[in-house]
Amino acid sequence: MIEWISSWLLVQPALAHCPLCTAAAGTGLAVTRFYGLDDAAVGLWLGAFAVSGASWMSRILKVGKEIVAAASVILTLLTLWVAGVLGNPAYSVFGVDRIVLGLIAGSLLAFYVPMMKKRIPYQSLVVTVSILIAATVVLWLI
Image 1 (cartoon, rainbow, N blue to C red):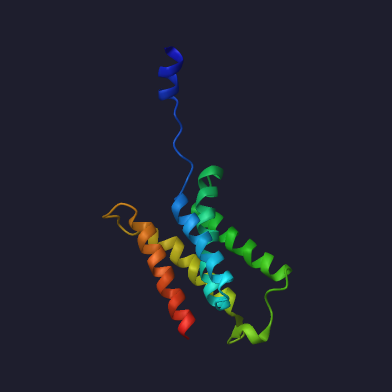
Image 2 (cartoon, one colour):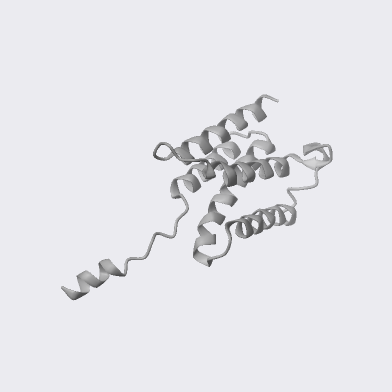
């Protein structure tokens, strides 16, 4: 009986940002790559995925969300550069790779949209994914 009571008193809070957001961003990333959409659209979802995963890590590491999100985006860019994905002039706009532009836009969206005042359940997920889908459609059309 004492163990049961102490287990309720010692319950730790969940170390998650929003598993649904991370899963949605990962799915969006996979779908854009699978259907061969533009690198800017892929970068949009890649940036959202990097920031969403960084939000989880910031709580585990007990470090500011901004620092971990920035480190995640920088490490993602470094990985793309080492893999040879960046640097092709055919895939750039004004000298900047389209995937980098998308990654920055997706990172900013995933970082700031969940901070909006919540009025309905799962609002941050619905609004973030809706904005990312709308931005993907816009990038697909141009």
